[in-house]
Structures are given as C-alpha cells and as structure tokens.
Image 1: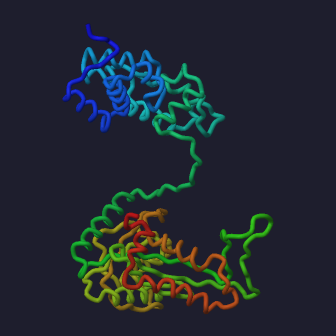
Image 2: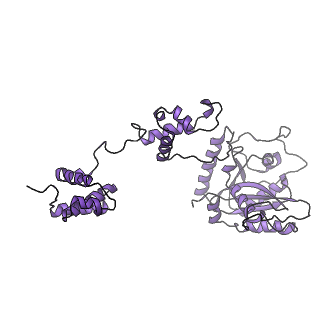
Length: 384
C-alpha cells in the first residue's frame, strides 16, 4: 500500500508541477506546487509546512494539498467554487456594490439629516440596506476594498449655458476639419489676459521659520497691460500682441496679425469666450458671416449696426466659434496665461521698470512662435 504522506510522480507530472511552480496564476498555485515537489523529493509534509515555504503553514494544510492532489491531480490544487471569505456586500458583485454606494453618496445628505452637508459612515450605513448591521470600521474597510476614499473637495463652477454640448460639438467638428486641411483651414484658441507693474505674491523657497519670500514692490503708480493671444491647438504656435487697452481697434489689429501668420488660410476659426467686445458690430462686420449663430452676450444698449465713430474695418477671413459661457476650462490658452504668470509675473523684480517687464512677457511668448510641442503638453492638448 502506498504511503499517503509520500508522493510518487511521473516525469510528465513533475514537469507540469514545475511549470505551475514557475508561472502559475493565481499565486497560491505556485506555493502549492512547490510544496508537492518538495514532498516528491522526500521532505515530509510536516517539514514542508514548517520550513519549506516562504510562509509558515499548518501541517494539516499541506497534508490537505497532498490529499487533494492524490485524489484529483492538478485540478485538486485550485480553489473550489464558493470557497474563500465572502464579501460583506454578498451576494452583490463588487461592481454593483460600488455603483450603489456611489449613487448614495452622490445625493444630498440633507435629505437624510437636515443638519448635515457631508456624508458620514454612520449616515451611509443608514441609507444602504446591506450596510445596516456592519460596524463603522467594517463600512470603512468595504469602502477601501471598493476603491472609495475620504477626499478633500475642490471648488468648481458648472457652466449655465444651455448650448454647452452643441458649442463643444461644433468646435470638435471644426478641429477635425483643420486636421484634414491644415493649409486652407486654421483653428486657434483666442483670449486676453492682464498683468500689472507690481509683482503678485506666490510661493518661493525660503528658510524654515519666520522668514518669508518678499514681493519687491516699488513706489511707482500701478500700471496695467493686456496681452492678446491665439494658440494653434495642432502645432502649438502662438500669435501674441500686447496693448494698453483692449478695444475694437486693437482686436482687429490682432486678428490681422493672425491672418498674416497664416496667409494661405481660406478660413480661420477663432475659438473665444463670450466677452461682449468680441461681438461688437464693427468687428463682426469685418469678419466672415457666421455659419452657426448663438446668442451674443452684448449689452442691451448695443445695436447690430456698426458705429461710424470706429469706421469701417478691413475684411478678414475669420469666423468666430463661441465657447460655452462661464467655462474657462474649455479654453486651453488659459493655461498659457497661468504659465506666464508663474514664470514671469509672480514675485518679479522689475517693479521699477515697466517697459522691461512688458518686454520680458513678450519674450516669453515669442518662444512659442512657430509651434511648441512642450506647450501643447502643458495646456493638455497632447498626452504627457
């Protein structure tokens, strides 16, 4: 009679266990096959359990592996269906359980307790039926297992624009057209930003303690300058113009510079926000007719008739594409403004030399003339 505590293996069985030991999945199969190979080499199951594995096991556990292998072969090493610890959210699958929890915490907790503005583990346990009999620490463990954690909130604003999706869909369509016909069709994101003579305060390295970085201000009166920019989302090319005030005339001058940058373009799409001056009658009369029109956010006292005070402006092959209202996150050039503020404006040391500061901002923008892959990465138009 064969000894039940020893294991005789054929060459094919040995090779099968070696393959399972080296590459078996899940990991528990590698441990069990290792144990069986050592028993085959003459080591007792008791000794294998105590010293032969990476993790110390009870001898009865190794004896059970050996018995199941003798009875069922390699199939006996796998977990039987239904074995193992049952999840707290059984019989639900993890996906269904997570979906129910997300739906619960997505609601206003004030509907459950009018004195609460945030969910607690206790109130979550009250509204999710299968959590009612679980302790707070148990609920916390379930959240961790399902990939839900307690996080600090971030502020955000939701665009109130009823045409939000339609505007973005139109922009995506035009971007695709420009990719197919880059010579004759150009798309740029346009915006303006302002900066002052006096430096803005920001973080800087300093000695730990009561010493702080200083923003070197001057006794000069505060002055403001405006930068007008256009970013090509396909090349990273930037057209930049600096003015003392943003008027209909300065905008038209800037639009002319864009057309000069792309002389072969038959149509240039200008994606911009809903600042009223962008839709001034004199400017609109100088551009191409709009193929899709949305409400223009102009003051009620403005008319669609061009003003004689400004005069007639030269025609330009430009069509406006409106961004959703109050949705600055849809305009990637906003991140370029953040970059120039971080690199040049914050804590600058030119508060006594306004012309030098203006030139420094211009020089920063000039580095992107002709295109920049680095800029496209920075503003999120290319993956990192």
